[in-house]
Image (tube, rainbow, N blue to C red):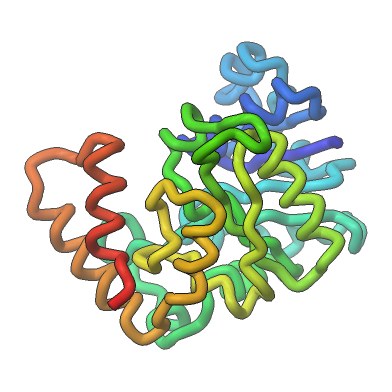
Amino acid sequence: MKIGIIGVGNIGSTLARKLAGAGHEVSIANSKGAENVRPFADEIGATAADTQGAIAGAELIVLTIPFPAIEKLSKNLFADSGDELIVVDTGNYYPGLRDPNIPAIDAGQVESEWVAEQIGRPVIKAFNNILADSLARLGRDPGAPGRLAVAVAGDDAAAKRVVMGLVDQVGFDPVDGGLLAESWRQQPSTPAYCCDFDAETMRRGLAAANKDETPKRRDALIAHLQSLEGYPEHNDLVALNRRFNAAD
């Protein structure tokens, strides 16, 4: 599959490495241009590109950039792309920690519905509810005991199946998160968010999510993180998520 990845932070670079290693034709881009990403692209066997170059001819695009950068994307970014192009949103909203406040999301709009509105086309929500370190190190073969899960939400059933196949290919059990309108269930500080859960535990977490409580839990976790002297190590962060995100 021809895959373009826009954004090479922790999630984007890990996905690029894994998908290129699995034999996909991967192009990577960031806001600084092709030359900026060329050393990493050469390292993993991908193609360095600018944003339009990563999109051109792609069958699937992964948007893995912060929400302020989403707002800066051209409204015509996908103007030359056919309806069959799948766009995956991996983003999460962290107001006060990383992101400025976005009034529509603060008022209750589902994060990935906001993203779809910004770019003018549907998205599939995936790879947002797993930590980058888990994605990089904890993938397992299908059927392995304790294999971790990744939720996938979206309205196009065929596109969602493609993305769920990629989740499986990079080492995780795909869990159907429902329609895009339900993707708030895998947003930050829900019981299914970044807790290193297996598929069955994640399904229970998705079902237990409380939309009214989630922003309060998220803000409490952000305040706690800001009170720490340093950022938590992986195991500590998983423990924090499990504690702050747990359903009542």
